[in-house]
Length: 140
Image 1: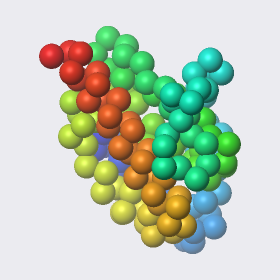
Image 2: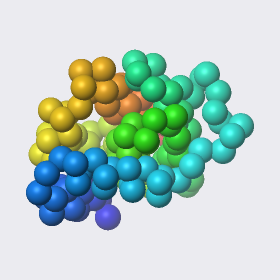
Image 3: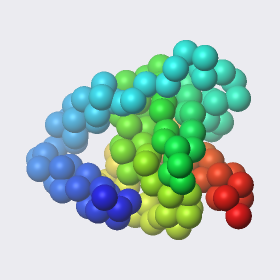
Image 4: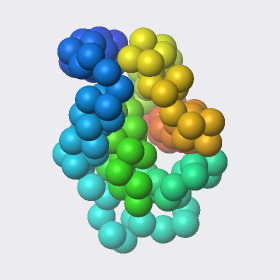
């Protein structure tokens, strides 16, 4: 599946819920299914700067695609990173770099987060794209 197709799937899933309490519950469930980062990668180098909670992300190239794993010490934040990893993991670096993230606005996520969590969301997207840029540079 392409990033766009995955994002559309996420938008469809979120549209099934009538209110934000249900969406938060769904995000918590997504966080529980997150491919967890190995303990050895839970280092300061892998912490996303700009997040209120601790969020660790590890990226690894497998053939020509990036696989991400992550964890967070906060359940909502874990759900947020789970959504992003679902959209970007297993994709080509170039596709991640060029990916539009307006699906975040479509599901209404940013407007239902506190300002500090919304900043953290932006930091998470930025970090995933930075990994992609680093790997794309290696491929060229």
